[in-house]
Length: 372
Image (cartoon, rainbow, N blue to C red; front, top):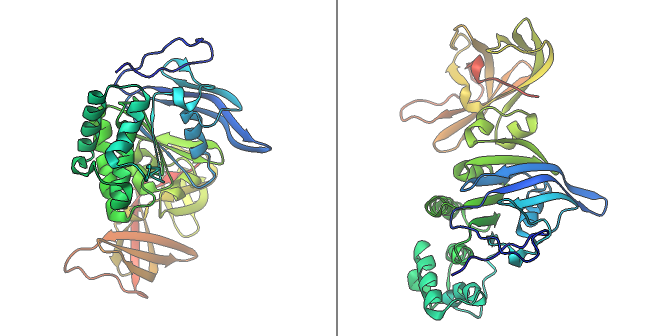
């Protein structure tokens, strides 16, 4: 089958070939306005060929707008969208060689599963034997090859989402766009699909732009994550970097529980309301704010515990809340005017700290991250 073509503004119907390897993508100085509302502004981003990149952020952050601009369902108010080295900013969606999966499965209810997959191939003019072969391969890829003669209403939600994924991939696109595709699934099925999608992406060497507001999903699947808020990029990085070394309070708080400690830096030490400790890096003097993940804090029984070692902070406190989470236990410990969230692994035979008890918290200053 000849590859679909991309028709850019300056190509005058010239065909631009793509390959089965993932396409690179670039957004340059992109903005999108809806009347007086600026949904996206000064947006610059490059996606590498074969990369799984996730746009993560709250509702209204601009992540779906970005995907729609790449899909060709929306056109930018200014700036450029490039696939490979071709400007496709004004190219309609049907001329872009890409697969798209949404949260709603969008399957044709009057067609069988096989017919749903065959439809996009038939519209491209493939021969019947080619359609049959590609349809079979796509269903095998998502482990639904025995479901070809069933109708969407006869499938579970997870099976329908697999069909939607297979339909997006049946024409071998170099670029796959996914907008909250697992939002309607239960937790166990969602986790299973996360791994399955990642394996398919790696096997096919696809470029994937994935949109979600689920932090755990982004951490599980992504090569890199772009954290967005109010139409702008807050931080870009690999999952470990964003979780362990956030640059801003927004990014730190968006990735789950975190202790935000306001204070000031003086003489190479961070001075908070209830404790002070040396910083592992040089920092400017003055007002500051830092982040400390709950699992980085050690908790010990009694007021005289803690790891009293160079480079460690130690504070006594009272346990004011205990929540059992299965593999972990979540404590809230009050020290002076500060409440610390602490998470520890649950170990067989090890007693949990009791509410109202006195404990000592300690942490390595290297795990404390100064925020911009």
